[in-house]
Amino acid sequence: MNQTMLEEATRFGDAVAAYLKPYRQELKDYAWPMSPTARNKAREYGLAVGDEDGGALATQELRKAVAQRVREVHGLSGAQRNTRMAELCGFVIRVWGGLASNRDDTIEAYSGVFLDTCPADLSDIRSARQLRSHTGCSFPFKGISSWSKWLNFVWSDWALIYDARIAFALNAIHFREGVDARAFRVPEGRDALLSKIDTQSLAGLRYLKRRGEQVPGLATDNKKLVQWMEAALAPEADTYEYYLLVMQRARDLLDQEEACSLVDAEMLLFYLSNRQVVRDLLGSLSSSI
Image 1: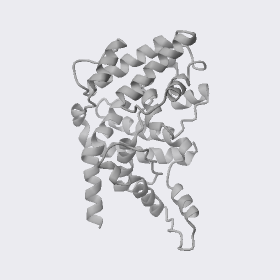
Image 2 (image 1 turned 90 degrees about the horizontal axis):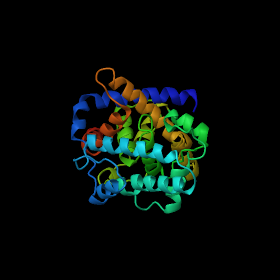
Image 3 (image 1 turned 180 degrees about the vertical axis):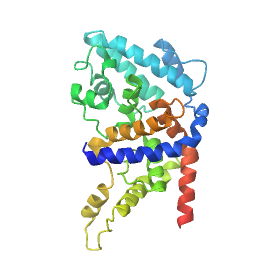
Image 4 (image 1 turned 90 degrees about the vertical axis):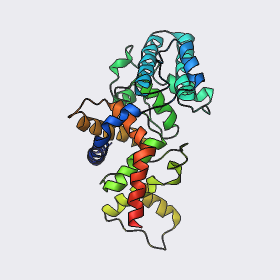
């Protein structure tokens, strides 16, 4: 990632922190209800799920339990290690995350990426850059909503979930604040309201306008128009690391006044996405029409 994108991530993180700051206390209302299937499967694996249906504390408790179990399994060898790691990965992505369409070979690919190349103590991996250097992991945009859930449960101190609600919220903040930074690509999502609003294009066009980029003339073919719009987005290969830098900057600013973990910042953004963020964005759009 070049210096320009590092600077853009800082500016973007400043805007995210400023937006989230008034809503810090609303994280107590966060909920990701666990299905009976998820709760039963977690108990089957001996993973703590708490007494709640899925509040912030229960989610954090489950995340810690999975991380600990992953480290235990990583210390095993042979087929037993591979099978048990795939079971944990499948639980996180398919059952807890609700992304049941992931095939067995896909889950095995996600769960096996660090098995043979990472240190014996997985906690020695402290960043996406370190994980890439050990494994050659490319952080592809395809499947990002799935594999980022797995990374987050393994390394919640630095890895975050990236999905449609997160990307929507980031781009909405970008559009409202006119951030001088590239926008985020939005993966396919399941939220009926958020899927109606294309924040990827809104934020991208705002960025290009700020940069003084003129809309290509009528003679420009569609392929070149696509390339013009692509320039407003973080490159696919850099999307995940760019996202982490944005959120780390936001977390650092929020943490100055009150303790805030990286996961706290992400969960707050996720929680607000289809509540406050979408309403603020629609208000901004309606006033400009």
